[in-house]
Every structure is written in structure tokens, then in C-alpha cells.
Image (cartoon, rainbow over all chains, first blue to last red):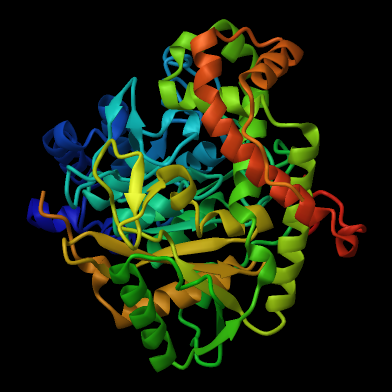
Length: 471
Length: 66
């Protein structure tokens, strides 16, 4: 098989070839590592590449598979891991100078589960420093760039994971998502990412950003590939106090179930309001595609949604500033300027501001749960805009009005984060400049399965996910 | 209710004292416009949450379905 063909394999396709011995894990891993060597000089999606370790694991996988021991769909698959997720013996910087020499003695639970499933960890991906920001313009490890146009940002904070998957420098990746950090880079890099219900996937040994909103989850080119990874990492973990004892369904088996009769809500004056025209057009077209598959679309009012940005900024300011309190006093100069400023601001809120924001989450969640008596999922764009130039701190969404990037970028992704709901980002088209547009689908607590079904049905009806950046 | 006044540099000085956060003067000054916007929005949310209909609402710091 030609090298280009190997790089374009999905996890599902590669797993089938590996299982029957038609593809070698060593060949696949070597091809991916060579791809990293070629394109990552431009993209800067990796902080650490684990070349020798990956080759060793791939050789072991090859021996096992040849001997008849195939561990499952991730066995021999090259996977990347965001650099705030612990990897035993491999530097885990969280994109920071402060942790630049941190080599964990333990894996994160999600890392352990991937390793047990036979995944080949090819490297640790670039990210916004300590995950506190949405651009992955990292002052310590360099600016990460978007493979669809390297002058544009890959979003963040899991920007390295998003760029790496889109650029075919891994077949799937792990990211973390607090206010949108998986879904935002999934959208602007034209890939799929899922934020799970809080408690569904273990946060054990993951550097925190905001404890009450943090999650870990996969990013891949197809919904099916996300499901293959999610099925491995989801489930109760006694090492994580926030982990939920909720059974994990057989997502893969449910994927093929028809979506006819499912109901999707569009939130009045919100879902399609205040977005760039290309974004609105792509999401409206995606809703029409879902309707053609038998999904019913209904408009629903949700008055409490106004106020979500302030609540998110308050919580995402106060909680990180609490975690970073000591370092901000002893190592302030080691932070990048933007993160240092945000951490300083987080110390300026009153306790009443923080608690009112947490009370607001209860109101928002109740309103969503009432909405879920009428629909099975809600749809919004993932971002109101497509990828902005690297280094931009302002964005224009409509009427030539410049807006602050941090508030604008969390316009849609902050809502499910606050309400503790799962949300999937799936590619639904491109703007006139060839930059990807993503659609967010928000589900009931612990009902990631319905999101996967809707996303998979959409991808079977469209081909956006098969397009590759011309790097 | 009267519109929110911008945060004064003296308020940031006091908050730094209360938090035992020794910020240089130029960094304190930089925070003024940003904090003014953030605090105005946070106070607006607090006013909303003070509505009588929300009296029974408790903060979410841990999600219930587990």
C-alpha cells in the first residue's frame, strides 16, 4: 500500500488490516513518524515525539498479532496524547515552562487504558499553556498552526491534537475539554471531537484547569474512530473522585441504528444567531441533511442561555487561579503573558461571583433537561467563525465589529460545559477560503451514544470528513 | 439599578492586599479595563440569580447523575 494511502486510513480501516495481517504496525508507525518529521516543522503540533518508544511498541504489537493475540481495534494504531495528560517516563509539560522538566512516574488512567488496548503512543501534542486559552499560540513550545492554512490558528487548547489528526500525523488523539478545548480545535481542523458527560471519562493524573468542568476525550477523523477510542477510555475509575458509576453502552453496536424519528432542537435566537455567514449556511445545510435522514428539527426557546459567557469566564477564572495560586506567587515570570494575566484576574473575583456562576449552572442545566423532554439533542455551530490568523486576539463575526477572541470563541461550546452535558463536534463544510466549519450536537447526560449515532449518520450521508489538507 | 462603575486601581490594590498577591504597579494598572468588564458581567449575572424564582437554586459543583 502506498504511503499516502496508509496515512489516509481511518482507525477502523487500519484496525481491520492489522487484525488480518495485511498491514504491519511497524510499517504504519514508521509511516506516521516520517510524516511527523516532514510536516511538523510547519505545524508544530507536537511538543515531544516518542519515536523510539513508538517503534518498540509497534514491534511488540506486530509479534503479538502474528502470534494470534489481537487486542482489539486500537492494537498497533498510532495515537497522540495532549501534553497535560500524564505519560509514565515521558515528559508532560502541560504546554508550560513550569512543568518543562516534569516526567511523571505514573500514567493517567486514560493513558493506561490506551496502552492496555495496544495503542502506539507516537507523541505528546502542543496545547495552550495549562489549557487556559483557545489559540495554542504557545510562548514556550511555539505557535501551533492549522494544516488547512498554516497562517491560521488550530484553536485550542487541544490545538496540537486537532492539527495532528487533520494532518495525518496520527490516526487519533486525546484532548481535554473544559470550556470547548476539544470541540474548538476539532471544528477548525475539520475533524470529530467529543466532550463527554462529566464523570464518564477519568481525569486521574491529568493536569487540571477547572475542576468542575474538566473532561478528557478522543479526537479523530470520523465519528466511528472516536467511538473506537471512547469505548476504551470511558468507564468508572476509582482513582477519580468525580468518576461516575454509570454503565458504558456498546457504542459501536449502536452506531448503525437508524436516526429516523430522532428529534433535534435548534435554540431560538441563539443556535444560528451571531455567526459568520458561511458558518450559518453550513449548519443550516447540515440540519437539512439530518432532516433528509428522517430527523425532526424543532425550534426551542431557552431564555437562561443569556449569561453563559459570564458564568464560564467566572468559573474558568477562579478555579485555575486556585490551582495556580502558589506558582503565581513564586514563578509568575515563567507563565506566558496571556495566561499570567488571566490567572491574576481570577484572583480578583468575589466568592459571591463564583457561587452565583455555579448557581447559574443549575438553572441552565434544568432548562436543558426540560428541553430534553421534547428533543433528543440540540444543535449549534461549534464556533461562530472559522479559523482566524495565528496571533489574533480579536475576531470579526458580523457587521465588521471586532470582538474579544476569548469571549467569542466560547459562544457555543461553553453552554454544554456549564450544564455538564456531552457534546460532539462534527465537520459540516468549508468557507470560501477552504477553512472547515463544525457543528456541535449536545446530548442528555451520559447519552453520548445518541450524539455518535447522529454524527455517524451525517458522515455516511456526506463526504466532508474524507477531505484532506494539502500539506 | 445604576450602571456599573469601572473598577478603580485602588480596588485592585486592595484586592491584591487581601489576596496577598504582590503585583507590580504596571501589572495592576493593566488589569483595570479587563476587570471592569468582567466584574460588570459577573454582577449582572448575580442580579439575575438574585431573582425570587431562583431562591431554591443551589450551586453545582458536582453533577448528580452518578
